[in-house]
Length: 112
Image (cartoon, rainbow, N blue to C red; front, top):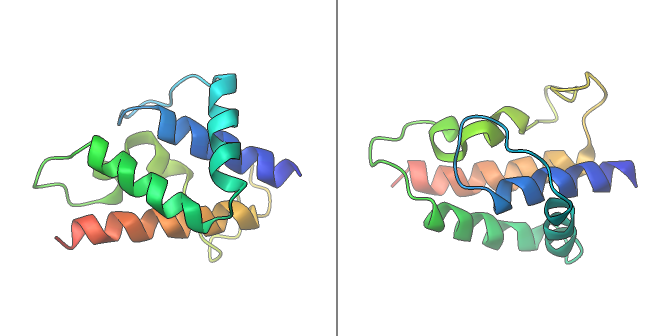
């Protein structure tokens, strides 16, 4: 349950905020947004991320995921890393799945 909540908080904060390089403050609305996205399964997150990227266009010279996502790029994890970047705990499997979805959506834009 904690993994779901952590992932919902991250995803909601990301989707509710414009691109910025400092971490926005958390609000209860972020958890509600993340829950609403994740309750339908990870697959629905791709559409939400795609819409966020369209609503937050970047310079045509953007070269990295960090250029596209701002602060959120620092919170993406992979199975290879094995540890949550903030807590040094074993990586949250749900966050790994969401991170892969976000990276995939970013890849579509960076390959333009």
